[in-house]
Length: 297
Image (tube, rainbow, N blue to C red; front, side, top):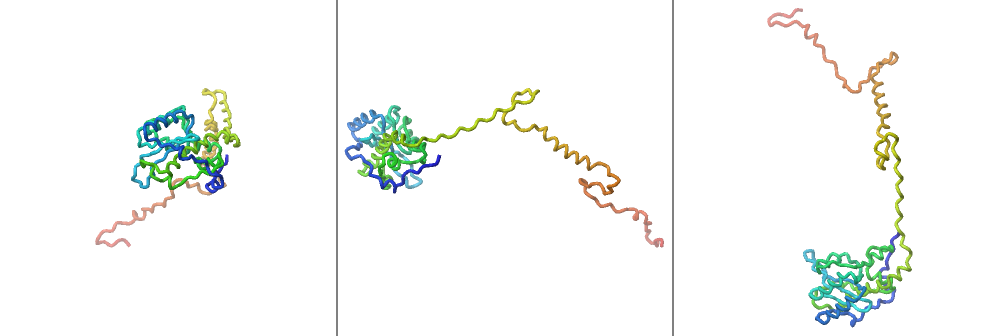
């Protein structure tokens, strides 16, 4: 199945703007009463948009202590839980560990590994929407901006400057609150509109099944081990005997006595040729020379 391309930033700018949450619908609980109201609303929601924010690291020696903010949103409200509050950590842990509340977001691989250590609970009923779009042929990471363009037909603006701001600050700025709230709110809106969008998409092509292997042929009569497996379908080793017999036949022919009409010398294939030793006979036939006596002339 060919990969599809999600709308680019330039494509998204041509669309009408995303209907962002107003300030009155963004909640940042800090008091006991505010946390109680947030708990009542969040634990009653069947589906929540979900995202996190962490203080960026600009140096290799810095330690990652995030996430610092957990964002949870419905289609009309959002809650920002700053995890330096003990009550915020407890509420985030209860919501994320709940099996009855669906949490939907984008790019949640890091959150799945970091939040259990941060909150001390395992995450349940969490949906990474990137994987839904991947099943329809899109890249593995679509993100909320492209998903809003695809599903809602709207331009979701994200500020790079705000995304790299200090999310561990005790007080979040107005821009930070809107950025974080609408990240989770956008995921909630996409999840709500996703079933209708999927119905308009072409059927997802399934990978063709592999052809079945042919049944192995049974061995001949006299075999005691039953049918031969697929890996033993090679010819038996005895079939290579003609090659060995041919080689041995050539070697045998080379050692036959020569025919009268072939006067050439026998093959000298193995033993190296050695030069004949000089005869010692002339040295033995010389008469010894006695000092003082002339040698015979």
